[in-house]
Figure 1 (cartoon, rainbow, N blue to C red):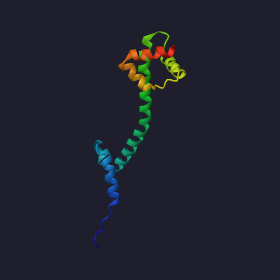
Figure 2: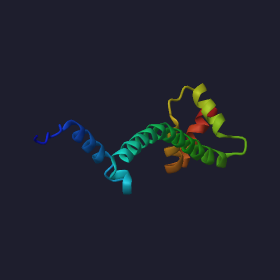
Figure 3: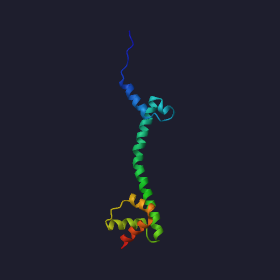
Figure 4: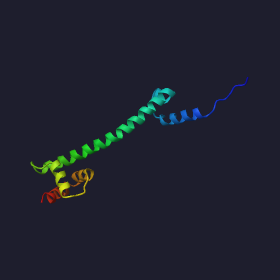
Amino acid sequence: MTRIRRGYIARRRRTKMRLFVSSFRGAHSKLTRTITQQKIRALFSAHRDRDRQKRNFRRLWITRINAVIRKRGISYSYSRLIHNLYKRRVLLNRKILAQVAILNKNCLYMISNEIIK
């Protein structure tokens, strides 16, 4: 009997997985079972950390705004600034406020003075 050649579909699937994990070290990029496990793990971590990254950036922006605002006066804080922004219906998000706080503190002080009035 002659030898039967297997199809190409499974090999193509494994090759696709190998391309995904080609930068991993050791058996994580060589052995098929570990490749599948590491691919699942990598995709899971990427999905989880996208939300975590948004959270961390928001915390960073809040910290930066608060640090600059507190230098202005003892009784003024981040929460009061945001509250006054909402009361006056000023559409500035935290990312923009943090950039203004770092690059141009006087501009942030002017915004807060206008809101307080």
